[in-house]
Amino acid sequence: SLPTLKSTESTNINEGRILAPLSLTQQRLWFIEKVQGHSTNYNMPFALTLKGEVDPKNIEAALRHVILQHEILRTTYEEVNGQAQQCIHQDIAGLFALTHHDKLYVKAQNTKTKSDNDKPIEFTEALKPTLIGLAQTPFELSCELPIRAHWFSQNDRQENVLFINVHHIAF
Image 1 (cartoon, rainbow, N blue to C red):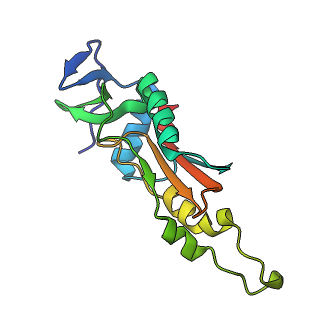
Image 2 (image 1 turned 180 degrees about the horizontal axis):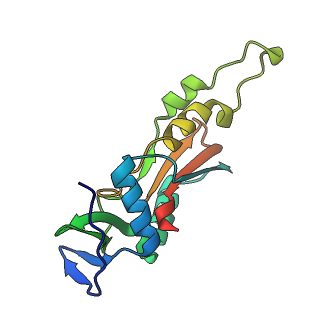
């Protein structure tokens, strides 16, 4: 049977999270996901190349700060008593972390091409298949935040890539 969409006026605080009704747009996206299953149609990925030595701990702290300032980024979507609800988490511990990818993995992909006079493949070019794979990973909105972040750096840490994927439900 199809899920029931009901809106309530009340907001409940339960287990460190605030329960609130879905907006009409959120209801539509939640309903589509329930009917069609998990999809990447609403993923909004982007990658930033950062040159120079960057401490990923600072990047993670900045992302955590942004997530804590915006309820929509710390919200999961669950069925509570048969009704779809926003579950706005007060704490994001265990729900968000900047995923660091092994430098050796990236180094292994940074090999020479057989054409173009044996020029080395650019770091970001070598990452493309990995980034495409991350972009095509569906969100599980009932148990994870609508934002993910991944950090890649070369062994010399002079070229870094920050990959962020946000689900459209957050907009």
